[in-house]
Length: 627
View 1 (cartoon, rainbow, N blue to C red):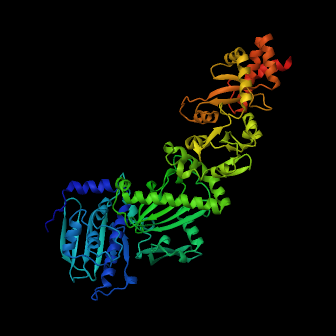
View 2: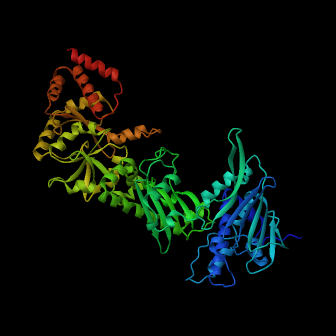
View 3: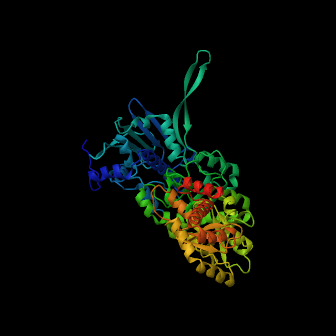
């Protein structure tokens, strides 16, 4: 029998489609099962209006089988089947879709879910087989036809025999090679796994004869192979069930099983949206971070389905980075099953779904913060850093979405509070939101710079996460209240009289201060007397956009960035050390320089900065103490 040529452009198109569109060979089974599901759907749909067709939905099914000896894999359904002409149209033309045509010919009021497009997806089977046979008999005919092809060279169609309507697809699985072990598609366990992963929620049963080993004789350790028909898929996804039919523990068990977590989720978020883009989503906020969450290996994304058929395990485009901790699924009938990652990224439907999901998660978190604060704090202690990262990432373009979700430790309340709560309790004379950064609450609390602000009875936000200051910098202000670092050189809490007094002191001792700066070196920008400090002799403040804590973050990065804070050494003008320096400057310059270096090292230690030469400083301290 002469072969017929494919009616699409060329053999090259088929070759390109097989090797480029589907990089994952496992997809073939999803595609063929989806086509069978469509055929069953169409038959059942027609039976509702055509009295000649008598079928019961419970009798409709998809059957899988394989034979290792002949290297064949079979997918068979008892759906509507195809006539000779339909085999020509649907399989003879690449990317011709029988399912799509059927759906397009339905009236607007007729509802039926057609998953696949019998065309491009079907040919994905050539990735794993070197010959495909399709035996089909239409429900409208008593004649059956056999379509066969070995790929790009074309196909044949001939009359055949088939007892009942439906379609039987036989794949002749390729031999193993150095690049791929095709034997996996002739293995019971592997087939079960593929069905579970990609087609678990097909609404018709997917059955296969499976072998179970049962102990026949315990003493002789003899086993017997028992064959039985097994249904491989769950059929009804939990997100498509009515909420009233699903218990909390059902969602929890689904989450723990699907996402391999040993703990229940902290929050379950379910939604069903209809409109320009329709979809269902089932989202989970974990109770703890995955072990690899803060590593480069972690992959964000939601499982993306088209009518219960998996398109992508982790669709990263559905989640912004700041919500990357969210797990879950999205199922939409508006997304084509046959779609590449590149086309998916350009999909307007997907972008709209992503936008809605982002808004839904944010609103649920806001609700949790308002209605269940303890649960929110538990969430925030685990994933708060990610929200703060979202505030300053992308040049702060998402800061307004997240500013009311971030929390910081309050010096006054000794617990986490929101920015809204801070501003609501600000004193009448307070003009700014004050914060201090450090490695821990204890270390921040003991900073010399904190004293003056606390003395005014102002609350201070203690920032201990590496990302905190970058978050604050991105926000710039909250409800028109600017953020001010208590270690900023421009902290303005003194009276006009105090400012004039300290200004005069610095002018009077400018030579002393200049010599102190020279003794310290280029690491310091300025040395000055200060009236900010209460009990501490010295401290380091900064000017400019980079604080000391920011410098620590930059210094910890693998690539040396050379970004340094512009540091100022401030000396408590009312401390006894101030008088000592003034006396030494007049009497003993060498001793004066020793004191200067010791005081600067002390200020660096308080700020959590390393001392360049601790041996030298230790020696200087001993010399001073010995006198």
